[in-house]
Length: 250
Ligand SMILES: [Zn+2]
Figure 1 (cartoon, rainbow, N blue to C red):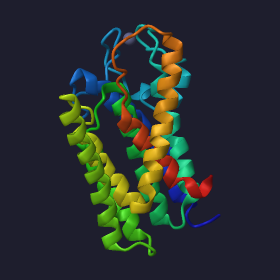
Figure 2 (figure 1 turned 30 degrees about the vertical axis):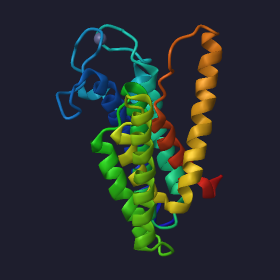
Figure 3 (figure 1 turned 180 degrees about the horizontal axis):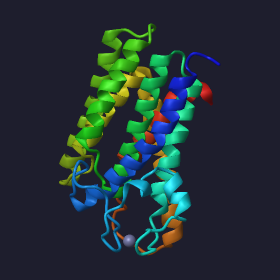
């Protein structure tokens, strides 16, 4: 058994709980509720969810995805987020070069998943996720002997700067907000974690993903003219940053 096996096991189990927490965060954001507030309640009957029903993955399977009290369906995305948190930990274990790399990598991927969920659910990239993402990116760079501090800071500055320029340009041209400040903070973290040279690839992958999804949605909607389609671009940037980080695996 390799020395890292206990850590890998811990990360994969923790991943389910983290996924559950991130799904709850994204769920509460549009309602303006705090993630550190009271324990989750059933959205249908209002009953507080008991400790035995809060075991990630297991509770959902055990209760068949329904509330114990009223039988109302619990959104499938909660279950997917829990399994997703575990799957990301497995991927981090897979690419890791050292125990520290493993832990930081899992954290990096979980934070990105949280940002994807929050942006899709509420068009928001909370500071509570972009801040830790930046710190984790700095630590990932520090842990990698092939990277130098100036390159890390340059990556963060160029990532944030490019999106800040885009934000200002869009506002001048269209007279309204297109990109949020959250996208700028997100790009600082991605630039720190992946480096300057990865930024064009991250942006390209994000644009391709976003266009693919927007195209599929437009096809499904038909030709009805319906104003601008709002795209949670931060979600695609975060997803692309995860894919680029996992590149050695692909
Ligand atoms: Zn209920």
